[in-house]
Image (cartoon, rainbow, N blue to C red):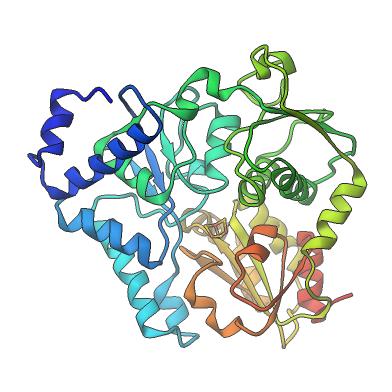
Amino acid sequence: MYLTREEKRILDGELGEGTQKALELLVAIGDAYDAEKMIPISRAHAASSGQEGDLYFVELLASGGARCRVPTSTNPVYDIKYFDSLFEVPKDEGEVARRVMEAYKRIGAILSWSCIPYMAENIPLYGETVAFSESSATPYVNSVIGAKTNREAAQSALAAGIIGKTPKYGLHIKENRRGTHFVKVETLLKDEFDYTLLGYYVGKRIGYGIPVFSGITRQPSTEEFINFCAMSNVSGAISMFYIPGLTVEASTVEEAFQGDTPKDKISVTDRDLKQACEELQTASGKIDFVMLGCPHYTLKQVEEVARLLNGKKIHKDVAFWLCTSATTRLLAERNGYVDIIEKSGGHVVVDTCIDEPCWIAYKNQVGMTDSPKCAYYRRFKEAIVGRRQDCVEAAVKGKWR
Ligand code: F3S
């Protein structure tokens, strides 16, 4: 890979060991993908987590004096103070989370602790070159916003944020952004949950690729896009997709395929989505808790929960959790939504991911969620997956059906 004089100096350690390690990683990735050179990025999102691999890398860079050169936001870990006041989180795991959060601070990252930073704390513009990790973030940034990112890991995104560059390969090259699979949607997608199931189903069927959709005639909402992105990039590896005319980069199916023929064609029916939903259920009946906000809820979603819960009490045997960003919670507080949810007996937590040791108390319990991703990464025993309104109804009744 061609390296500039400055890049060579960094590799020689002139800017310190942390920056050197970050560039070493990027060069190794670039070599693996035959990248011709490094290109500048304007922002990054590191899918940080309170886990040991993340701790190792961010501490390695931070202790070597590295600092982010471009705005680099962070994924949720967990609200240590809040959970310590309620549960006994194993000390060693809590310590990993604390050190991860501390190291990201030292390295100069934006301490957003949110998995949808593209909504508020770190928003790319159309055409920007960025390095975003996190399941919903990569396809959202490529397809909905029209910026360019590869499907980064937490480590490669952090390294890119420190260097302010990424190797030029993959989705940074126009011809690699062409569609690979044609997907005909033969069912009416009514709401966010249908998009969640569509993402889950399409990701599973395609695996790795760039689907081009037809049959979607209504402009999806922000929340529908977020959920489609999160689920398709968990059940599969969908870094980008097209709904010609409704996403930004191609106005026709032909344009999305850049003149190529699709590798495969699939259709999605009502029955497929129903079956996908059934597959996700591992329990029914009594529930111990409800977990919402995977990905983190937007203000609109928090408002909907507040409206559904208003004047009702959550069942005494059920815990109710809603995860969101600190930014959203602040607005939700101002609007009175947090108050309504808390008066009903729910928790509105910030900085927190559903895949963290703070949920230890639910290890052997049954949880209900509106997110197949939450069910997939669950730290609890059994999962019921349903619409948001079903989750709220079950929380009040103490059981689902
Ligand atoms: Fe966000 Fe964690 Fe879910 S990062 S999308 S809450 S698994």
